[in-house]
Amino acid sequence: MLRAAHEIGVQKLLYLGSSCVYPRDCPQPIREEYLLTGPLEETNYAYAIAKIAGLLSCRAYRQQFGCQFISAMPTNLYGPHDNFDLQGSHVIPAMLRKFHEAKLRGERAVTIWGSGQPRRKFLHVDDLADACLFLLEDYDGESTINVGTGLDVTIRELAELIREIVYPEAELQLNLTKPDGTPRKQLDVSRLHALGWRHSRSLREGLQDTYAWYANHSPDS
Image (cartoon, rainbow, N blue to C red; front, top):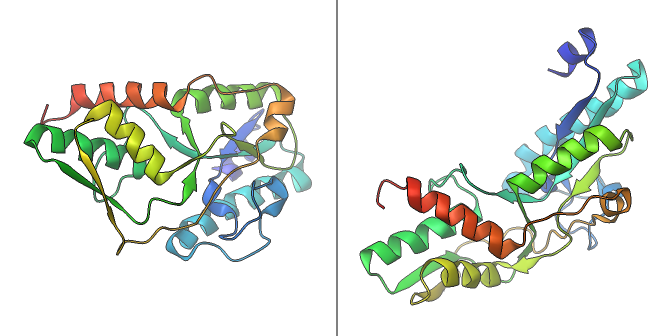
């Protein structure tokens, strides 16, 4: 795709990476220059390497051909039309579905993976779309740029918020036999803030919006 964009003279291209590209034990908050400074998280290193290849390719096209290829590093995303399959979804859609199905079945306990202590940031897809347009119009740097809210929560805090939205009567249980993954991924978004962009949706508002969509489209509803 990058080669085709170069050959046909695409005016500007934005490549999206992932916060998974940063080393597992990065200093916090994670700044853009920490890329490739340490070992990756083993549970997703193949995905991270693929993303890193794209980031470095954009940089190489800029240096060799002068292409206006930029890259951004979004934090964890969520929102309507997400993948809610429990076998392959990310944490927010998985939790929303677990609490939703427990409510429908009248089950009192909902189990989440791990200790609940890892910290994560989450960004609604509508905010990411807005950030992408902003960067295409107002950013043309060679360095990748982090995109997020600047706020993070523990997985347990996230589960408690989802419980409050979906099924307040549920009891939260932890499955300590499951892995936690990277302890913390707190992206430093000061560069993006300095350019003038900030998110517009709170986590609660975004979760309410996402759950409303899922509840209306779930086959079990």
